Image 1 (cartoon, helix red, strand yellow):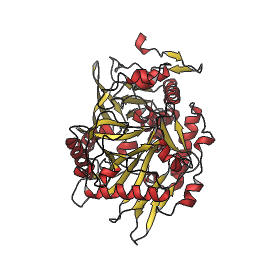
Image 2 (image 1 turned 90 degrees about the vertical axis):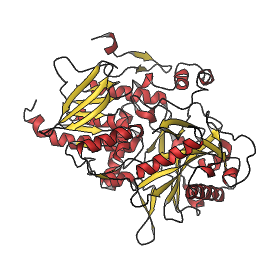
Image 3 (image 1 turned 90 degrees about the horizontal axis):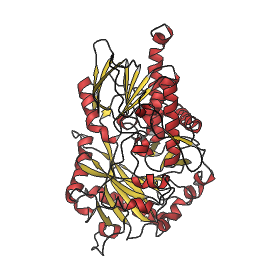
Image 4 (image 1 turned 60 degrees about the vertical axis):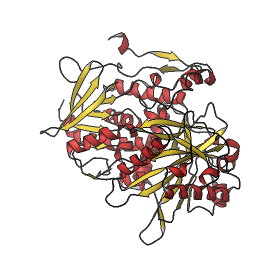
Length: 521
């Protein structure tokens, strides 16, 4: 074993041991004698991929995870690293002020775990989204329920995700994270649907422990994580198995396996499209995509909304019958930006250990893409139009400016590099109307919640993968090829992604069980 192959263990300020390197070397490659034996190749080391690998390993399979980035500890934002090492965030901020956008979105653990984040439901799954029913009524639904085919099954898998995370070191949520939102429910007559389900947050330092413990269990079970291995091809062979090629620092690596789980995040969209085409996976253009903005105001302004529930989901149908909703509420957080499809995109960042004086939330419209259009292309054009107007940067204006008022100075925002311009000039008119109606409804719920000086930033794009034909086990039309998490086109989020990873791995294990028990090894 080389020095790079050894697991390095440091001690954090709490005295706990923490692995700062993964199960295998960041530059590990296939042995010279041939490709490593594996039952399942998992592409992507985020929550969906890691839970797929862990589930397979617990079922007696040998899983190989290909992660394009490095270890989680190596790819964290310098601000976060400074805090974990006991230095001030401000000290690290000096080195980030000119960073045009975040580049800390790859690496073991996935983009979400690289920042303090919200895990989602801890008590019970809810139907948090709405849509117009055929009879003119409004119905609620859960994306995970639809992906897995059953509400009960979806709820059971969410519970399994939490049991696993608790066993891996996630502390159970305290009372501060378990507001029931009853006050908001009683007050609310201005939204067509309100979801205030209990949820749990997780900080980066806890996530480091959870991921390290998960990887240690994978290693003990004979599975492996290959870091800095970027998958380049997935090809189904005549015998029904798969050839997977990946590029590493030492050259090309080839693996053969009876099953593959694709678990890439949003940034993997172009590559997933190639895999779909190369293998003839049945799909259709995305018929719905989520596009919108991040709304940001002071933490004090938004407090009345967040006092009863720290992640409320509020929805209504616009005049076109499309759902408009709040998304990813970050109390005391900041807005972050990252490079996406040649443009730029925004997301919310939770700052649980070092809260800011601001809070932000997404406002998204689930656009029903016109017949004949590809939803993925629609979302790309949405992001590109804003980026072109912003000179390659996101665009920020105030709510008053979005209503048509003249600019009254530079807006107050947590974004570092942006263009101050009127979003009316680069957003579809329909989206502008939806954002302003959401603002009006929020102010009807709590007067003064969103002042005219609050900022609106764009673009935000979600759920833009092609609409894949998948079974309830997340298996595509190509037997043995699964798509989970973001790349499934069905769901997003940590717990949802992990649940789909479990479902896929259990399907693989059931298929390979006869070979395992019959001396196939």
